[in-house]
Image 1 (cartoon, rainbow, N blue to C red):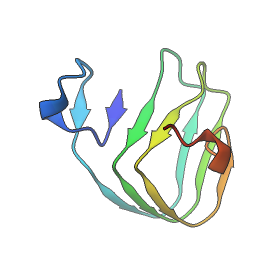
Image 2: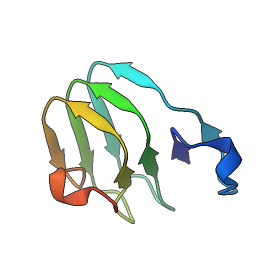
Image 3: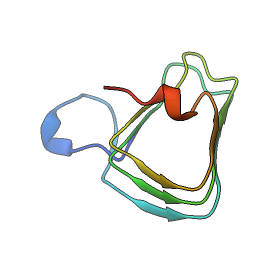
Amino acid sequence: MLIGSDPAAGSGAPDCAGNTITGPVSLEANTGGVEFSADRVVGPLRCEANEPAPRVSGTTVVGPRSGQCGVSAEAP
């Protein structure tokens, strides 16, 4: 699942255009890949036990980031 993608980009993954999410976001125990792209999270973003680790790119987080979605997880 690609959360917050640009449908014109043609990634082939199901698209969910850029979102503003108010409150905590937790991505846990997903398999097959999760990409969190071009969203805004107002609250904590926590990622644990995903295989592979989520790709986070172009997402603004106003709150703490932890686990696999820590600051070092930001994709280029």
